[in-house]
Length: 141
Image (cartoon, rainbow, N blue to C red):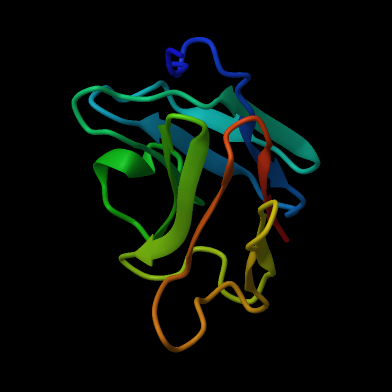
């Protein structure tokens, strides 16, 4: 029996919800860089899972600085890799913690990643995986 490819499997979505009073600036980055998206309070960004043949995965980069992808401010990275029927995901910060003092929660089907104060807990990053047809929802603030 042939196996399904990513093209035929129902795909979930990577969703980012901004509940902060200030805007969040977001880019979807793989072998190409998507345009800057601005999320104002109580708005969301949604992208259907995709597989990048060159990088394997996608990094959704979030900052509090307009145009920040080019200037390296504190950045949160919501990374995912969609392979076969599974999506693997993680959450990390680089150059600081842009949402320090605010709750950051990535809700996965089986493994959630929660930073109560916007900073990863001691012990490094946490990685999860789930069925590729289920959504991952990152809520900030």
